[in-house]
Length: 273
Image 1: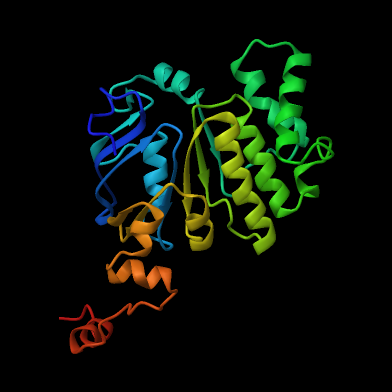
Image 2: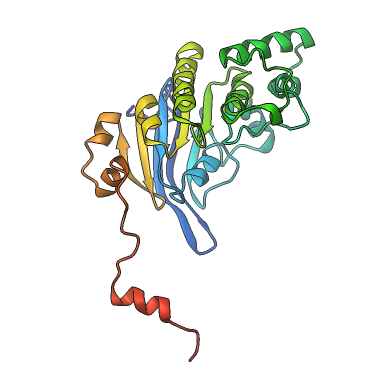
């Protein structure tokens, strides 16, 4: 990892320091820090409920943490105004879990949307740029289809085409393999690696799919109950002695309850005096 701060080192495109957040009285993230280097594929892993989605929302500025700081492409999210955040988001892409396409628009119209909203390019240029991205996703013959006509894998790739149509510096991809068969998932993994290499972009992937993470990641961060339990290269993660990491690697069922008398008392307690 670079030794300089995100403000001093232009090789760092995303930096988070001491992020904590809660929903009501329930803590979700606890002092989470990370730094992502330019050109890196950084994977955030964890079981359902580990805080991955909340962390992603903080990293892209959709919600602010209770404490801590996110610096995105050199800009502190806590200090910029709405107009500056709007401009900043033009340089990032977000591929949502289900594709998040607009059902009333065709595939090509969905992909063109960011260019129509954020640029003054003419229609011909917008169509060419959008077709180039669809071609990268092997969706060149699907541009006139509607989202309801696409398979799960095609929806993911169409959403990814829209996310990268403006050639962002940083791409966030939420659960790329969720709900996909193994072959389609493997193809999407190859696509993520190819995009990073071809477009020289930095990629942050949020996933719970172990096989995918080990294949695509330069580094992996593992969350458990909102806390970082491991952060390192693929080799460092696979060699971690932390039992929670080993449980994830070997798909072992974790003991969810201690099974002691205190837990039994909790189950049978009442509000009566």
